[in-house]
Amino acid sequence: MFQSKKKVAFLCLACIFAAASAAVFFSCKSKAQKVREKTYEYNQEQLVKVLNKEDISEETRFAVIKNIAQNMLSQKDYPNLILFLSEWVENHPDDQYNAYWLLVTANAYLEMDSNPLAEYYFERIINNYNDLMITTNSGEKVSVHFMSLQHLVQISQTPANKISYFNQLITRFPDKVKITELYVRLALEYEKEGEWNLALKAFRQFLAQDDASTIRIPDLPNAYANAREFVDFYNTSKFWTFETLDDLVAAIKQAISTNNPGLLDNYKSRVNFFNISWRQDENTSNPQATFSAGTYMRGNRVRFSDTLDEISTPTEAYLRTWGWSNSKVWYFYFRKINFPVDPKVHGRWEWAGVYYGDKM
Image 1 (cartoon, one colour):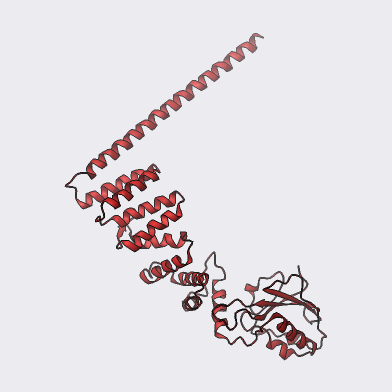
Image 2 (cartoon, one colour):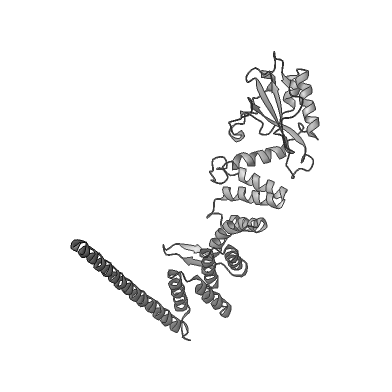
């Protein structure tokens, strides 16, 4: 019993000591924090006093404002940083470094996840201020306009705006960007805007680059294949297309029923026709130059389903056939053409490929 009481007393003392130690620790931490805050406030006040001097030189003024801003950045005091710099620009319209102050302001908004406001300030820089070369901490001289445009192409959600940004990067800073990648990104933004002729032009510019077929763009893994298909499709006569799906299916069935391999081959698409298994990706195979349905049709009685497969949609359709020499079952794949750049073919149908075997 006595030992138990001693143990309890010891534990109580230990807890009291721990609590006291924690209090001392947090007290010291609080004092250190207060010292840092006072030092920060004092430094800022001294910098503001220097800034307010009437005889301050332009170079000194730039250094002082930059130090004030950097101190705020170190504290992650983004609201006051934005207020300080935006008021400075408004009250000193003749400051030759205003483009830089707005750049810092825009970056502060990025840190606050306020992309629309950041975009507003980046746009102000490129639209209302002359370009300015600044020296980074590493000693590299960088264009303020270039840095703004780099951010804009990443955060903007408006295709029309991104088109402008991409074009400016290509024309103004060709040595600082990956031209090949920008051309294909530009083409995709033109597509979103329905500017099909300009999209075609940008795709052609992309394909004309020496590294177009080898470039690796992480979020656009099939950039080259898609651009090549777009341009090649535009350049062909599209004689194999049909006005309606019913017309196309009827023609395919007629060629099979009459055992006419030449006629059947004539109906296949001449651009990116594929013949693959269900497990494969159509982008990994493009044997259209050598594929001939007739090769697997001769000497066999090929048949087809009366109706299209149940997985068919308003823009894609599948017809089950069987009796081929290589793989007994083929699914003919029909696709509604989405190609607004050529109104004559847009909305028509084509036989775009073959899937071997039964569906997975």
